[in-house]
Each structure stands twice: as C-alpha cells, then as structure tokens.
Image (tube, rainbow over all chains, first blue to last red; front, side):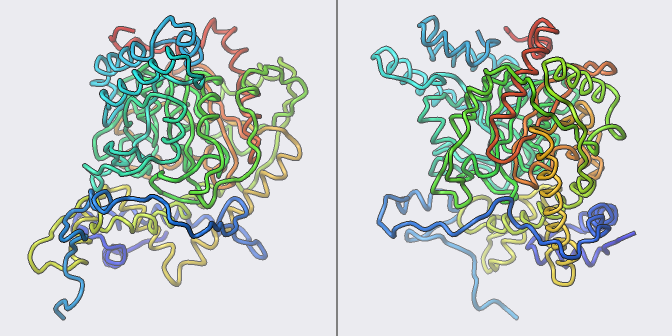
Length: 99
Length: 498
C-alpha cells in the first residue's frame, strides 16, 4: 500500500503555495494512501512502445496578424484588483525579503 | 407555461401567444418559489434578464428576424464568465469577482437573444460529482431533496429539472454534464472536444474541459447545442471544420440499421440493479426500432478512472496556479511587511476548499520529478490505449452505449468523506473525456428500488455529435409513447405554482 507522510504532504503543499493547517496535513496524508493505490493502477498495464497522449486532437500553432484591437481599459483591468495604486496592481513585497 | 419544452415556448413566442417578458417573469417567479429548497442558483440576475427579454419583445414587434431561441430563458453554470455578473466557479477565492468580458459561450447565447436568468451552483472549480464541494453549500435534487443532483454541473441540472429554466449550460470534464443529467432525469450533452469554445470557461483540466447544453428533451438540447458550437479563433484548440446538423438529427427519428455497441466493461458488476434493468430495457426498445445491438470490448477502460484522476489533477495543479492573490480575487494576510509568497500561501489556503486542495496536491505529486513517468506519463499512455479502444469499437458500431452512472442519485453527505467512492461514480463517463469524443445522457426511466431517474449514455466519434441526437431522439420518442409522456412530467411538484 502506498503512503505519503504528513511531512511529504507539507512539502507538496509548500510547492503548491498552500499553507495548510496541521489538521489538514494529517487528514490529507491519511487519505493519500488509498488515492495513490487507486491511481497507481495505471502502472499495471504494459505500456512499452505506447505513445503518450497529451491532447485528444491534433493541435497546431494558431497565428493571427499582429493588429491593434480594442481591449480592456486600465479601469476595467484593475476592477478586480485586491489592491491598486497609481493605476497599477499593488502587490506585497517581492524583493529584499528577510533571510 | 414553464413546464413546456423550449421548442414549444419558441412557437408560442413566434405566434405572439406569450412575450419573452412574461416567460422570463414566470421563471423568475418559479425561482423565488422553489429555489429556497433546491438552491440551484448562486446569483439571479433579475434586472438583466428582464431587460434582455424586453429588448427581444421590442425586436419581435418591430418585425426583426430572430433566432428560434430568442426570448427563451436559460441558466448558466457559474464557471463561465459573463460581463459584469459575479462569477465564482463555486469557490471562495473568486467571491465578489465580476469579470470584464463575456466568454464565447455567453457571447453566442446573447447574440441568439437567449435570456440569461443567472449563474448556477457547482462543485468548486468543477471538481466533484455531487455539487457538495461548492463553497456556497450544496444543491438539492428536485426528485428527492435529501439527495444530490450529481455534479459538478448540479445547479444547472437542478434548475432545468425543477422547471426554473427550460435550458442550461454546464461543463463536462469527467462527466459533469452527463452524470447530473442522469441523476435529475433530463438530457445533457458533452459535445466533441473543441466544438464549443473554452474562451472564458474557467479552466480545471484544459485537455478535458468542454461546455455543453442541458434540456428537458433531446430537441431542446440540440437547439442550444447549435447555438454554442462553432469555431472560435480565441481558443487555440477550437476545431475549424464543418459541424454536423444536430437539430435535424434530433428530429430524424429513423435508426433502422444503425449499429449500437454495448461496452462490455461499462455494465454489470458495480451497477445498481435498477440502473442495469432500465439500461437493458432501453436496448430492447432500440432493437425494436430496427437498430442492430452488438457487444464491444474496450479492455483499457478498466484503467480510465485511474488515468483521469492523474491527468485532471495534474492539469489543475498548473491551471489553478493563476489564483495567486495578485490581480483579482481573494487576498489574505496582506499586512505590513508580509511577503508576496506568504500572502499567496495564506490566500490559497483560505480560498480553496478541501477537494480542490486534494487535487492540487495529488497533481503536484504526480508531476514532481521522480514520479512524473510512473504516474502522469503512464496515465497519458493509458489515454492513448483508450483512444485506440474507441477507434476499434467505432469500426464495429456507429454509436456506443452504457448506463451514464452506476447508481441513481445518492444522499447528501453519503460519499463526501470517501473520495474514492465519489470518484467511482464517474467510471462510465470519463472515457469520453479522455478520448475527446462526444456523449449524451438521456432519461431511461426510474429505478424500481428507489423510484429515481436513470440515465442512458450514448457516445459517438469526434465531430459526429449528430449521431447522439439521432439515436437519442429515436429512443426518447419510443420511451415517451411507452410512458405516456416525458419522464420529467413524473417529477415531484415541489410545492411551487407549476
């Protein structure tokens, strides 16, 4: 049976930028064994020589002319911003953090 | 008036027997009567709906040529953006967000003059099969209010089956249109991948997501399908080709000589007795209409569920990275000196529900170095095998069939603490998504043991959506004459003024 420890889940949560509560880390790690066992069934099949499918239909690049066309005004673009300043998105500090 | 089909409403509008304003008001009244118990809607746009209805009425009296669905009300799954209307995808992280643009589906609906009544409830980011994962509480099945309507498009399905709207839009990543249609006794179609634009459809799993129509009849569903399908340069995966005529197919009726393949792997063990019985009965009806019934073997389908629950979480872990608290949506913990990363961490914890976190973590794991080949890579290869199984089966049969879901509607709370039991409900619908083909669910009757609706699933190759409507229309007609009306007429009255 597969398993994922509380610390494994904490590491994945950090990678996914989710700060989980202790209770949630423990409950998720207890459920993960069953879920991993279920999805690990994909490894039961002999897949030698099988090509992977990332997309159900053939896709190709779609190009268009580089033309000026109507788009959102600055007010519209900022209308959902959690915080704004001088017609810009105001974000928390991203540089010069401690450490 | 509200218990008519959309086609009949359209006729009444054209003849001037009713106005769109009256029709829209009747549905708004129905919503205020019964939605306190059904809870299909997250947001009702009474003002916008009545404005649109008045505009259509004015256009009609001035003699302007209108689309057959002009003036008909519709319920919209809250996963599609509508300019200026709150759009949450059932998540707290988008609470209060008002998009500044219409999704292509909404633009097409508006262009046809269809009246949007409001946004419907759903499992958060379409992750779920019961609508219980909505951050705004569950939706209840109009057939039995102690049960779920299925999901993730449970709000849209419940709105149509409770006569709050004759038509609705849902989205289907692993069965999220077909399964709720089955559980609420209506018709739902997942069109061919690429047939309906994903522009403005909030992404869960981009290679599987597809919006599609709900209706109470096959013809109504075809009328709406026809409105939303078509090439869109704004979606790089949109198909630029000739789309089949689904409306003509829905009315054709004749299925003599059509070969129908029953998928061996999608019946029998694990399927509720009453579900299997109604399915078998529908097969007999199809045979009596002149179809040839054969059995087909799709051995890789046994691994479809496992492959789906790796591919979809992997894609979602990437897609949902956009909810970073910077440009829109919730922001938590933005105090003096807090770093962007700590704000992201806190916001995503507060904004996402348990199932969404579970899938993001699973996807992060499946994509992480050292596990990628064993999990995500293997799942992508299983996907190839499933496509090959379908290709082989479609050389033997014109359409393939199965029960839509292994059980009828389950109780609220029954599976919410058992993710695997919940995931198993998608076993028959998921292969369609992995292969990018199209599928329909239509009512096959009520299960003897619980009196709840059973869905019959029809699958057809990519861009052969018309076959779904041809076979579905014929089966629906034969079953309706057997029952003396459509199944939905047997739905409980819900105490409203129906």
